[in-house]
Length: 274
Image (cartoon, rainbow, N blue to C red):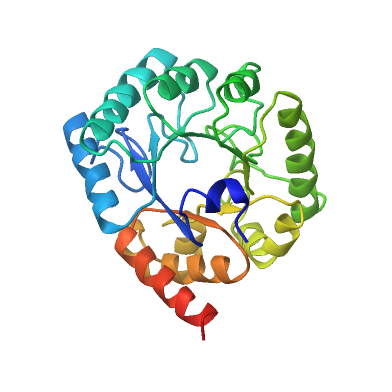
């Protein structure tokens, strides 16, 4: 069940979040929408296809990615937010950033939600910025940093360790007035392939924390490793795992292929109403 603050906006499960990377080096579509005009066109097209949230990122967080400057990140993101809202004033835009200044400027430009891969650890001012704005906040788990997170991820118990981290960071976020929280266990962010499947198998444990769960697994390497598929060949297994995630209780699916996700959402609705 979605919390009142989401259902009151007209959302129905699963909520489809489209990925819009305004970067030259993201693992799946790096460079494809680096030109802001193409990025805006892609964002508007995803909305037409049925995406309910557009998640805009200006810095790649793929394994091995090297950080860019905050100035560069801002220059990539803000014009795209403004242009999408110019053509679609009611669009719900999420910004994928761990930097508080980027988040603040994005919210001022009309972004609706902040999606923080660091879970509040990347910038000590992030919680205060989000708390003062009242914006929804995606609190994600990541072990390490993108540049080195896949070198040697280690857990005592991958599900328990991540649940503990999320619970701890939720309590801190709430002290800053952040109440509209979404949790993301961080598929692929400092996890071995088998650990990612373990997380998907145990989504119910993350649900027990009491917040909506976002799952972002679209085209990721653990799918390719399991099936020996290139990035361009991963859309079918992606939507299969997305449907599994929804049936396990995930509320938001962050994905590249909106058309596949809408088919999945329709089938889930048929199952639930059957």
